[in-house]
Every structure is written in C-alpha cells, then in structure tokens.
Image (cartoon, rainbow, N blue to C red; front, side, top):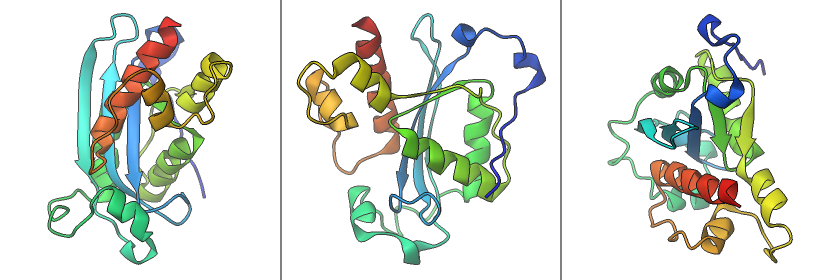
Amino acid sequence: MRVVIHSTRKEVGMSVTERLLAFSDFKTTGPDSTLHEILEIGLVVVDPKTFRTTDHLSEKVRPEHLETAMPRALAQVCYNEFDWQGACLPEDALRHYAEKTKGAILCVSNRASNLFLQAAFSKTGVQNEMCLNSLDFWTMAWIKLHRAGLAKFTLGEVAQYFGIPKEPRPHRALQGALDLFEIYKRLTAL
C-alpha cells in the first residue's frame, strides 16, 4: 500500500502552532484498516489560538465491500441501506475532507484512526495535504492522566473522567469529532 502525503507550498514555513487543528472521527466497518472501510467521517476544524470552530464536515461514505463488514461495527452506527442511500463515494468523501484539512494538523482518538485515513487516501488516490504532524488522544490522555487512576484511555473513558456526556446511539462521527475537541480543551487545561 502506498501512502500519499504532501505539504502545500503556501504552508511551507508556517509555524506548527499556527496550523488549524482537524479533529476527526471515522466510523468504520471493522477494526482492520487493510480490510475494512470508512462508513462515516466527522470533522471539526479549529483555530488553535482561539479554539473557534472554522469548519466542519459530516459525511456518510458508501461502502464498497459490505461483505467484509463486522456486524458489531455496523450495529454501532445503525448502518442500513436506506440511511446510506445518498452516501458519498469514498473518493468524493475524501476529497471533501481534504479540501477542509489542507495544511491542518490531524487530531484523532488513536493511531488506528490515522491508519484508516491514510489507507482511504491511498485507495482513492486523493491527495492528503495535511501537515505531517498529528495528535492522538490516547497518547495525550495517558501522559496527562496515567496517575489519575484511569484503567483505560478510550475516548469514552476519558470523556467520562471529564464529565463529558456519553456519546448517544447511534454513534455519529461528527459527535465523535466534537468529543475529541472537548477532550483536547480539557487535557490542554491540565
């Protein structure tokens, strides 16, 4: 698998502290980025200095290989053919995502989310022009909270620790991205 990562010319020399933050959540057909697909993309783009939301995206993605999907993953997002009728093709969804994240720093819950995104860019041929730097909240939470008695550092556990309401069902990617942003604000305030 070939991963395509590029920086745009206008972002060359831009300080990493000036780059927008792209809080991203992906609902998938299973846990394996080499086998499973993205079903839904949630994105909240934030100015790192003001914490003001500058853009967002909520996109359902049409699966191409539903036969490889895990029933539990489909149940989590309440996948059904009717609700996904108007879903974007993967390359269109990635193109929309790439337009909004050009030069931004990717912020995801864990490394697996990053792997899914990179695999999707590679499969669709859409260029990823985000910054090469990224943040994952598993690592940030462990660094900030490992002495606080948490047994796990999942998005749900950390959200609960901070009193952020539990993600409603069905799990939507945009809500996951918003929760990541809330957790980021709480972690950076510690």
